[in-house]
Each structure stands twice: as C-alpha cells, then as structure tokens.
Length: 235
Image (cartoon, rainbow, N blue to C red; front, side, top):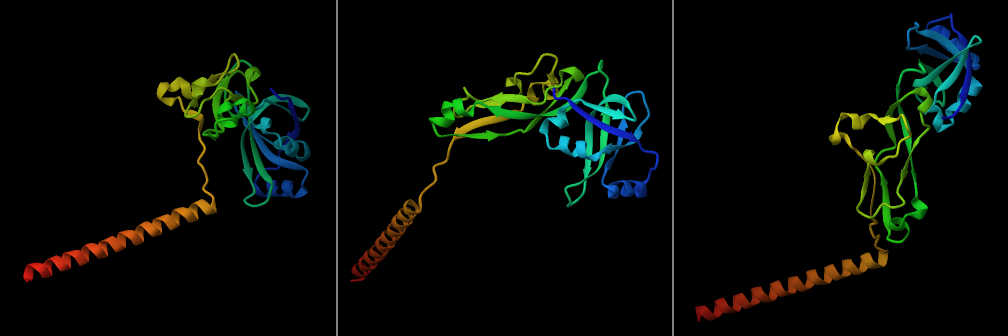
C-alpha cells in the first residue's frame, strides 16, 4: 500500500461563489470529507501536493493521510469532479476509513508475463484485456495498489477469470461473493489475425474477376446451346 499525505484546512466560506473564489486563487481545491460517525466536513486541499498525487495510479486505490488544520485522519478518494474541458479538478470527495472496518474499493489490474508467454512470443498469440480494474473488499491496512494478472502460462484460446487472480491475505473480490455466474473473464489470448498484403489482395481480386468472366462465358455458351437445341426441335 502506497503512502500519501495531503494537507487541508476547514472551509467555512461555503457556496458556489466561495468555491469559485477558491479555485481562482489557484492554491487549493474545494473538497468534502464524509463517512464514519462524524458529520460531513467541507475542506480546502492544498493543490500542489494533490495534483502531484493525482498523477499516480495507486493514489486512487490507497488510504491517504489527510491532515486538516493539524489533525490527521485516514481517507480514500471517492469521487472527483473535473472541468468539462480544462485539466482541472473542481471538487473532490473523500471518505473516512476506520481501521477496524472493511472498505470496498476498485483497484487496477496489471498484466504481467508477456515476455515469458510462449503463446504471444512463439505462436502469434494476441492478448485481449477484458477488464482494467476489479472491486475488492478488505481492511484499510490490506488494501493493495493493484492486482497482477500473470499470463506467462496462458495458452492460445484460453481465458483467465476473476477466480484465477491471486489476491493478498485479507482481500476478497466482491463479484465472486455473488456466485459463480459472476466469475467474469478478465483476459484471453487468441490467434492473431493474419493481415493480407496489398499484393495478396490484388491477386485475390484478379482471381475473382477471372472466375466471374469464365462463369459469364459459360452462361453465354449454355444459352447458345439451348437456343440451337430449340431451333433443331422446330425443324
């Protein structure tokens, strides 16, 4: 589990106008903390450290140490509101976490083993990643940054499902708790399609055209033979 720390202060000036003023100052990001037994608390998060953390994929699946007016608490990111066309976060939602209670989070899937895969390296296999993340449940201390999907031994035509994932101790995959029918496919390897060259396509088109001409000539000959046969009957 990665270690992230953010600083913030309580936000007492509320409303849309106050949030706009805060964003214009370009020093902090409007946010809110909720969850647990405490009431929701509007805050303003220091922008520089927050934006730097957003560049890291693991930030979104990690427990964050958030210091508000000098008091630290553990939270996770629950939602981000972004500007429709500018690379800006306009508001953030943080959920308080309790060390004694499990949390449900979505964590990314990292595919490994491509370099050792005979199906890909030697048999022209093509990898298809069918899921990029998975929902898990665990205590905050057991929260992984990601889960690995090892395809080193995956054969062509084979598929890995959620049940094939190796998860750390204390971590459960939420979908699998709903029954076997929820054991979703996450990756598979298929035979790569052979791309035709322009020359091969041209040869096929020429052969098709020649066959079409031959069929037309045969049809004409058949029609001529039928006509001659009819004339012979009349005589």
